[in-house]
Length: 291
Image 1 (cartoon, one colour):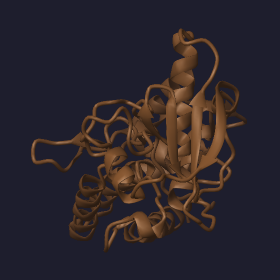
Image 2 (cartoon, one colour):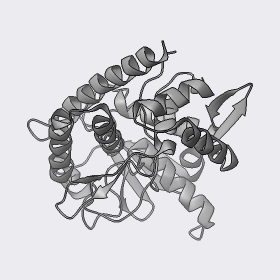
Image 3 (cartoon, helix red, strand yellow):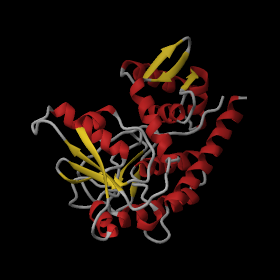
């Protein structure tokens, strides 16, 4: 087996709640990529203290996180049961969760093995990109998307576009206008390609000021540092698992800006390295437990 640890997308992309743990700018229509990430029961939004809230594990979150971290995202039932055992989850509890997840369309069952549904495979791809985004040299240009077509588009189309823009890590400057520095290589989802005209441009003013109006980098950085400390402080695998799930959620909200537009000591890469270290630890624990 080669399973690692992942986390399921659990919040709506592009949710305009502003100023939360995802680092979106208060008052902005949309800031950082809004693809939330954790399985229900892993971690939530910022708590009363302004830091991510960590919640107890569930059988569902263990199963989904294990499959999301595995390539290909398919494992026999016995491997998923063993993953649950690492966190004190009974065999029967995991098997009941598997049955319910198949019924809910989260998983597909075939020949005694379980695999992620197509919907969750797409989320796995976003998750993988958040851990290792594909960068390109930045020469000061921005990519701009302008919504075309009828103003009163069906709600489903609007939702699909907002989800796509979150995946692309674009921010919404105003209704129908999205942009970000052109430093990322990634394919455009059909909703974004079909509903928008795409341009490349350069701001006349200070790009750092534009960034500050679109993303709340201070909040994202503060939460990232809290998560780094929480992972270091957690002694047991279960505790580290819950923190790691919150880290992955937070990475999906990282706008992945070019270095010149980031504050000094930006913790994005440190958070990725920390998560990668836990993923290796989790994979070793699963492999050792399966022997």
